[in-house]
Image (cartoon, rainbow, N blue to C red; front, side):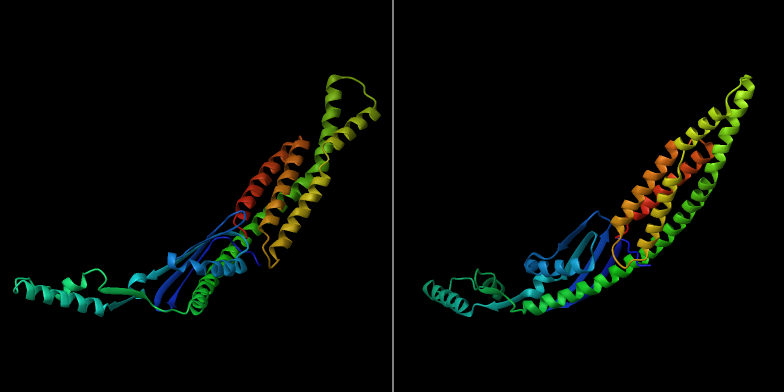
Length: 292
């Protein structure tokens, strides 16, 4: 079966340019598709490309991507000394010492490096196209794990749903067989009541009452539609495409038919089965909420 859950997690790590990067992607259930990409501010330009890859891999669910860069500031820093400025400062110090007769406390190397402008930090020249491709590869690797996790969880969901469908069909069969029996029991109950009252009633009138009862409590159409929804649910589970919304619709229709059966029938046995079927359909609905 091609069921896919909306819950999953994936992780990858590797080099992106000079940086050590760890990328995590996780997803949870959501009515639609919603993507959040958290990148270092300096890498904001890479977000659109990552979103495009997400849209190709995931059609439904909330997906969060976390890109963590180890020692971002240190790796990116290239420090140079502003030698002309330092030479000029040293010349000033020497001139000042000569003018004051050597009464100037000498500066240490650390003192000079702390002087504004002596140290120059410059950004490394990086190939952003290559970095974007590498970052995309890391996302693809994490997404492969995510998709596998969603498929594995989907297989468990499908197995669970199949068990619920089998239970639902069992109750359906009992209700279907019980319908004619309930009508006959109603006819017998009417006959006993008439006999107890000691009154005479035309058999044609008696038959009409039974027919009216049968028409009011007829649930054949609802049972057929309910069986059709069960079959459609099973068929959807075999499709290699997102079916979560379709299954959600089918569960709603199942619930509608079961409610109608319950409102039409006055038979205690059927009413009890209706309660059981409602419980099963509600359990199906909970499972379907996490299907892509």
